[in-house]
Image (tube, rainbow, N blue to C red; front, side, top):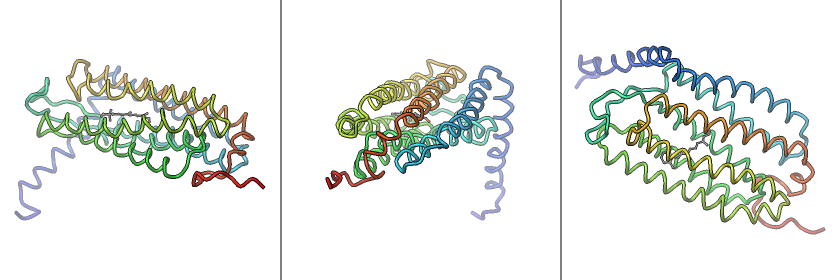
Length: 278
Ligand code: RET
C-alpha cells in the first residue's frame, strides 16, 4: 500500500483529532482536571523548595542524592502537563472481556511512560543513601524500568484482555525484584553506611505506597474497572504526592542536616568494596 493512500491518511486523522478531543474531555471534567493540576502545582512548589534546600550541599554523594531527588518533581511536572494537554492521554477501545469492552476509555498512559524516568531517580537516591554498590543499583534500576515499560504495555493493549493481564503480571514480576532489593539487600548496606534509621523510614514509605499502584491499576479503569476514570486518576495523584514530594522532602531534609554522615560513606556509585583503612 502506498504511504499516501487514502486509508493511511484516514488512520492519521483520528490520532490528531483525539488530542483535542481528550483535552476537551479533561478540561470539561473539573474533578478529573483537578487531580492533574494539583500535581502540576505541587511539583512546581517542590522544585523551588528542593533547590533552596539543596543548594548549599558540597559533598559528592549528597549532591548526587540532591540531583536525583530534584529530578523527581522535574519529571513529574512534565508528566502532568503532558496529560493535561492531552498529548499523553488516549481514547482506547477496550478489548472483549474487559468490563468496559467496546467503550472508549480515557487512558492516561503518559503516567507509565514518565514513571520510567521518575521511579529510577527515587531508587538511585535511596541506593545512594544506603551506599549500595553499582551492581545492586544497576539491578534495581533496570528491573524498575522493566516494570514501568511492561506496565505501559498492559495499559495500552487493546487487542486482547488476556494479554493486558499477562503484561500486568510481567510488570509485577519486575516489581518483586525491586521489592526484594529494597527489603532484603539495602537495609544491610544502609546499616554499614550509618544511614539505617532514615533509610528504614523512607524504605517503608516507598514499599507501602508503591504497592498501592498495582492495586489501583487492577481496580481502576485499566483493570476490572471497579473505579471510574476520575477516581483512578485521583488515586494515582495522591499516591504520587506521597511517594514523590513527601518522600523527596524527607530525604533532602535529612541529607541537608546530616551531610557529614552521607559524605563519610565514600564516593557515590562505588563498587561495593570497603574503603581502604589508611
Ligand atoms: C503498574 C501496573 C502493572 C503492575 C505494577 C505496576 C507498578 C507501578 C508502580 C509505580 C510507581 C510509581 C511511582 C511514581 C512516582 O513518580 C505499572 C501500575 C507492579 C510501583 C512511585
